[in-house]
Image 1 (cartoon, helix red, strand yellow):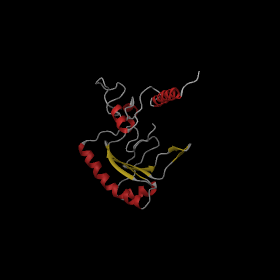
Image 2 (tube, one colour):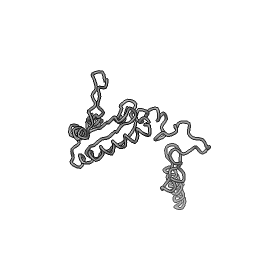
Image 3 (spheres, helix red, strand yellow):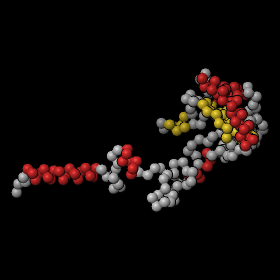
Image 4 (cartoon, helix red, strand yellow):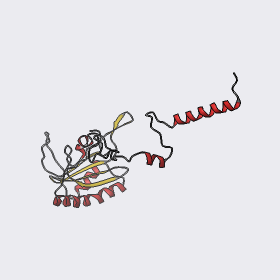
Length: 201
């Protein structure tokens, strides 16, 4: 039996509609938004409470990206608390260090030896430790940047990391490198003292 021209158009129209409907669904069967307005209307904001009114049981309060165990996994990256008086002392030292690092950055001098020499001129003593890690005085530590995994192997970027112990609970943590520099007053980190620990712990 031959199908009429109007019958073929009907079959084609139904087939096209089914194909378009299938393409608008993602792998989980949810309708995909076709523009940013529709997406904003159908997608809850990141970290939003569930429609039932309660927070997700998998998201910890204060968790950066909302990942389970975020706070436990990143505790080593949180600086300790400083007393108000010691925080003021640390901020004062940060303000002394910042113009030195800014000048070195503008001069494109960020190797650890040059940075160390410039900061020792401010009157700090270099931190000294024994073979077993015992402290023998000094407050300033300057070292190379942490190595990073890149293109299949580890590389150490140009630049210097700075750690200044102002008080037992107060530090200045800083760096200077090709792209930028930064100086912050903060409490010590649990495992790395006045140096901010690298990611990927």
